[in-house]
Length: 479
Image (cartoon, rainbow, N blue to C red; front, top):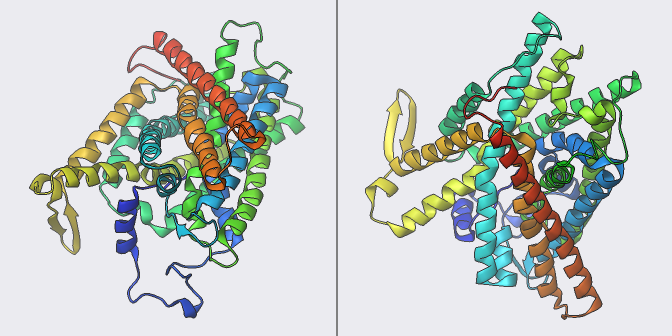
């Protein structure tokens, strides 16, 4: 999942810095009426699929195992279709007030301010940046688990499958943190053109490998034992694991925040909202098929022993190189995705600091550095703040190395307010839907059900983290 949502004033600053010189003309047929390159419905579909298929899909099989076939498929379809429906309504809010001729909203937060006003804009900002700030922790844990999986694979290959091969994830967390701290000092890293293409290739790669290996395990008769009720229905922790599993599903569906960035690339004729609705429908359908295949095939392959990370279950299989390749894909994908997701957090803090202390040399001065032919600028506040952020994320990831519970908590934080509630409220404001009407009741019911889902997911995730911490010795975690 790749999200780029910024404060609208800062978005304008970025647009000015990214503009071409001399600017292209509309009559050249290469750009739209706002001076940006034209794209088609198929490009939008590709972006939607790329942003929706991320590391979260690897936990869907575990979620299905906790929920069982009936509840698992129901919650998966409910979350995906609710997110898809809200995304479809969101396409009409790209322009204000008219969805065809109104003023463009270049970011999610711009649209919230235009339709719902300043108070909701501030609420959205807090929720959005909280979600983006904490997602770095989930990414760090995911990367460390993938690196440990490669270690375990090599260990089993050398010492045989009976060797426990337990490794600490701390060196990998620290190493990943150092890499991300260094990359975070590059102000334009998140705008490199090849980054999105690389993310698309690697995300499809590891998800496809997970599905392929699961199907191979099933077809060769080595599938696991499954049930309608899921893993250990008599356990006292069953309900908490089911709640956390629902959060994992919600996390995988949290892709709608990037829709305005995608819609902004579409040409204005035919109207962007109509083209985007078609792209959302096609991309969403492919996403749902992918999610169902990953969750059902993974659960069928491992049954009650389905691991939190689907790829971790293939360590004893003969396809060592495929599993290692998939884990390398995850690491490469997340190295770039971490920067894309955290850059908005870095920049909003730096923007607010410049506004608060406009005369501070520590905050505003760019110090030119030169090594031979290489020239770059170092800003002391940027260096200090981004390094501090990376250190805090690394320490928290070491202290809370719990993959599925962390993803569930992240899903709970973002799913209801950002993916469902605010888009529905913008739709109500745009269409001027009266209170106590049938349509208003229907939208409020959908929002309420998603709120209950998010609250349940948050409680399950917090319970899982609490239980894990009680049995966990700080800085001594091995897997």
